[in-house]
Every structure is written in C-alpha cells, then in structure tokens.
Length: 116
Length: 109
Image: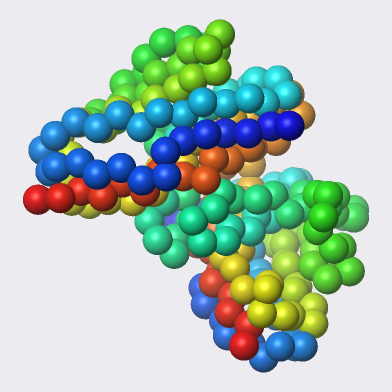
C-alpha cells in the first residue's frame, strides 16, 4: 500500500490565491524530504529540500517567498504556492528518501495544480 | 552542466522486446535508477544499478556501463499496461537525483 499520502491530487485555483499541498508519510519518519515540479513532457525538477525543524534549501531559480515549505514534523511536509499564477500550473510531487536505503525513495501521488 | 539524455518517444508491439537507452553526464555518480511513470501519477521504482553489468528483475532488466556513462532498460514480453513514460535518473556526488525527461513508450497491439 501507499506509504506516502499527498493531497490534494488535483486543484484548480484562481490567479492570485494560495494553495497548500500536504505530503505525509504513513508508516515511517523522515528528516529529509524533496519537492519536485514537473511540466508536461519534461523531467522532474527539484525545487527544494526540506529538513525537519529547519529551513528548506531551495534550488537556484526557485523563489523561496513564493513556494513556502514547512517540514514541521518527521511525518508531514507542506508546500504552499502563494499568489499563484498560470505559469505555476504544473505537477508537484513530494518524495521521502527511504531511510537506511541508498536506492529507493517514496513518492507521493502528485498534485496537479491548474491556475486559471 | 549535468544532463541525462534519453529518447523522447518509442513505439513497440505487444509481446515484443524494447530497449530504452540513457546516457548521462553528472558531477559524480552514486547510482542510476529507472522509474516508470503513468500520466498524472508519481514515478514507480523499477531498478537500480551502481556497478557495471546487468540487473534482471522479471520482465525488466537494466544495464549499466559507468565508463561510457550509459544505461539501458530492457522490457520483454511487452504488455499494453507497459505503456508509460520511463525515467532515467542518476544520483550525483551530492546524492541529488538528476532526472531525464523520460521516454514515452507506446505499445501497439
């Protein structure tokens, strides 16, 4: 069964509003989590790395004031897209590294954000 | 820079075999992954290679040549449900996953 729960799976919002995406690990704890964005027919692009209890590390070109990440506990991380614009429409995916494994990572189901 | 190259799209016939190639240039190497991704869904882990050679897992096999910066995913006895995008990803020296854009595989009856 799923070990990572991400919701909502789909959201449509008006331009200028904010949207919060939650990613929750169901049966394990993770100190580190990754947020990715994927545009159609493109690769997953790492947006930021969040660490429990500390500030997230953002990749170059990703606006930290626009994409707010909160990793308040070992099982929950949230991504808030603030003042969303149509160009923010994308597929957002969270990923927890699998503790004790150098291979796998657990992915959330993804969130399809459409800003109109 | 770092980049992962794989074909954009491939077409194959049900029951046949298909090989999806991936070449990479990254800052360091700590393993290569293949993931399957259906449209609108998260990637699903298929295989991991860190040493040269072939890893076989059922109908799927993955090959790695570190000296050539090259890998391939081999899918045998293709089924219609194998229609998906296949993503190649490399973990670099910073343990970051660098992703290819994916190869869309179309299976025809």
